[in-house]
Amino acid sequence: QVQLVESGGGLVQAGGSLRLSCAASGRTFLLYRMGWFRQAPGKEREFVAGILWSGGSPHYEASLKGRFTISSDNAKNTVYLQMNSLKPEDTAVYYCAGSRSSGGVYDYWGQGTQVTVSS
Image 1 (cartoon, rainbow, N blue to C red):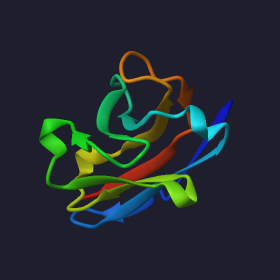
Image 2 (image 1 turned 180 degrees about the horizontal axis):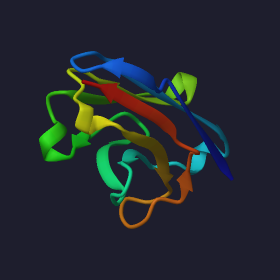
Image 3 (image 1 turned 180 degrees about the vertical axis):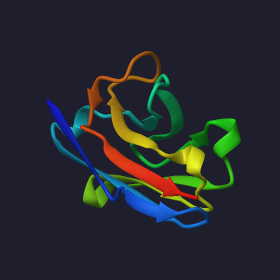
């Protein structure tokens, strides 16, 4: 199958930036689209951004567009999430996910990486 490993989380002050990475391994040829999700304490997991594994069609949760940028580097089997102008409300565990299809559920999930934004 496919394994996903996130990295790049940490503690940052409000207004700062972080770049998260999601390294895919295994049967990566199964991947069609990738996504980033996040879950804050006491809240449901929410969609952050998505992109085709090939790098096309980046899209975002509307309120995050302009601050977050998703990208894909197939040569490195890695998907990135660049996060700028971070706010305390961005504090959450961020998860990378992969899907074999164009719609429906994501089939593969990483273990998550903690992002904490201090005010």
